[in-house]
Picture (cartoon, rainbow, N blue to C red):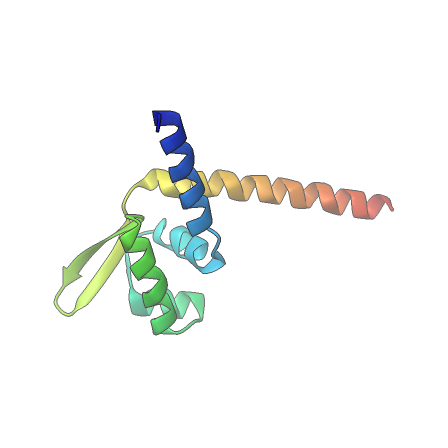
Length: 107
């Protein structure tokens, strides 16, 4: 398999992984700084077990990294460019939504 094909496969795998709104929300929250599971759960208004499940997947995919402090584990983004990529996609979605709203108003 040539290099480009491998990159395309990796890109598709990443996009499939990013198919979860909760994981995208976690990325944006961690973009503001590291957090423990309980903090993320509170900010997202979901259960600790749900956050833990998503973080486990994100850790496996090397999207987040951890730091232990006493009994707490803190999570942070493994690379700030992950947030940058998500921000670009978010801007595109906002732009598309704006166009849809404009078309709706013109009807």
